Amino acid sequence: MSEIDRCVLQTIVATANDHFFIVSGDGRILDISPGAEAVYGVSREELLSSSVQQLQTTGVLKPSITMEVLRTRRPAQLMQVTGTGRRVIAEAYPVFVNDKLERIISRSRDLTDLQLLQDEYALLQKRFSEHLKRSHATPDAEEQALDDALDNLQVRSHVMREIALLLKRVAPSDANVLMLGESGVGKTAFAKQLHRWSQRCDGPFIEVNCAAIPENLFESEMFGYQPGAFSGAARQGKAGLLEQAEGGTLFLDEIGELPLLMQTKLLKVIQDGSLTRLGDTRPRRVDFRLVVATNQNLGKQVEAGLFRLDLYYRLNVIPVTLPPLRDRREDIPDLVEACLKRLNQRYGRQKILDTRVWSTLMGSDWPGNVRELENWLERAWLSSPTDQIEVPAFHPQAENHSASFPSASPLPSAASLETHETLKEYLARLERETLEELSRTLPSTYAIAERLGISQSSVVRRLQRYCLKVAK
Image (cartoon, rainbow, N blue to C red; front, side):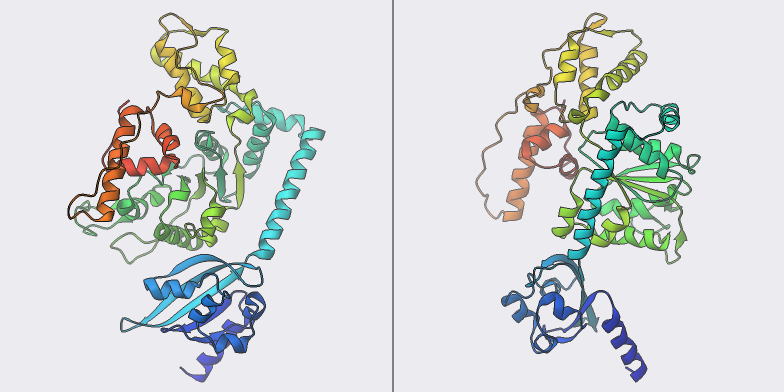
């Protein structure tokens, strides 16, 4: 390395906001950035005379990201709590020379002050929202314009009207929007409405369920491929979903299920505005508005190392949290009327609700939110022999969600380990047998998810893995 290059490298390390560690292939610390002293509570001299193995043993690095790279020989990202009580996000990358691991470059970013600022911002947002509720500050003209522009969205509650107004205001921009909320609250419906309000309304609206695409097909589906990129590839190649959203809106549902490798690739697309198809070397420019949704806590996923922090901040430009239906019961009448109208048009009869049905509709908690409400209404519509819809035998219970489903059969007892069967094969067999049993006895993937205590998207992915379907 020339003297100029060495000075350039030293300047980068010394002035960066991130805290750098340069470590040898056997764990010895070769160089660190000056700011690391304050974050980790150890002097520069002590750090340079130590190794990552020693620092992890003494609790200075809890845990050591470099040790993870030494173990896996792959890049890694995780959350650390330092000896000084600081919370940092750490990333580390291996450096190979002739396939030998020679160096590990790690950098950490202190999140403590950033978290305090986020908490303060959230508090200010809450106070502002409460102020709006007290003062009813929304202008009448804006309220009227919202009513005229809502199309098929049924929003009567104050909180949902605030959300709709926020989306209408940000729609003309290209800012990324993160939709948060339980399954079935209407994230997709609001994403579509945001697209209709945007300047890209004449472009396509491409909806992608990240949990429904098998991981081995994800890259080819999202980024497309060139002719001959892999065995079975279409002769003419294929444009990926990102390219198909050109000039419009790309809606990524269940973004929390996006594999880590695809998170890295998506982040690059967001940053560079271009992508490269599988089997191609030529980048292609893409132009779309990104809207994502999840029912998971992405912050906790970042801490668990399952979601990239830098991608999280890229997506979390306009966060919108849709409350569950049980917290906005004022919306239920309009939702019911709209759903009943659709059912009457679909099946060619004009059925009406018995007045006694309303106590059930308004009194249930609807854990599955709008989706569960609509499914229940369709079952009630189809099971009513006359043109008056009455409360069916399988009505939901506000106290116990499981009452709306047939009782599940007991899970199969654990079978013994077969001869020559590995632990991985044994656990996979038990998982398949359990899913087979539940898919025969429960009516939906949401019911299976509740029975197993996992997310519905995880159930969908596992059923696809074993080529299973819900029987009912």
